[in-house]
Length: 213
Image 1 (cartoon, rainbow, N blue to C red):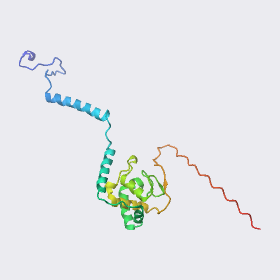
Image 2 (cartoon, rainbow, N blue to C red):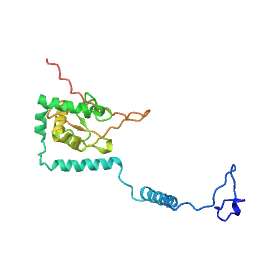
Image 3 (tube, rainbow, N blue to C red):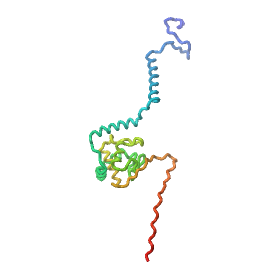
Image 4 (spheres, rainbow, N blue to C red):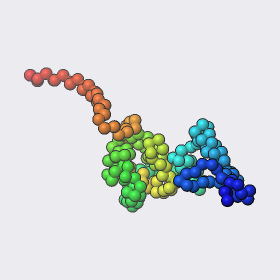
């Protein structure tokens, strides 16, 4: 008997592929709703992420969470260290040694084992990007510089270890030394010409004293 003429047999579609025919049946509702739901979701995803207000990046969300942790940690009421206290800590060998250990595990990859710089700024000279006073250095370490890729270490290390790291850095400096603020120096791209250095004119030499008679 021809299946197409049997009223109890499911209707078949007229096309044949490699001898295979398919039933002319409606897709199950669960499959259709899954398909329609995926379409609605994809449209909402496109509208939300590509046509509406952009969401914060991963770095911004991370920094926001670190800032909240810093605020929570600051609720302990711990007084901030002064420049004088940080200079005094920089002359304490035990504190400097503890700061060196923390610096080695968290800061060396960017600032170098001898504070010579690299990805991060050089810390062994008198030129500073964000301020060279001990309290300014502590603020930079604690809050970070997200625009330059430096996270805020305050919530991670805590106030004590931040103070020790700053004491270690300042142990390479002298209290009262001149501090020069310079713009942030990013690594130059390959082939870029170095900026010209203009030398300041030398002061005129003093006139020689006349020979004594």
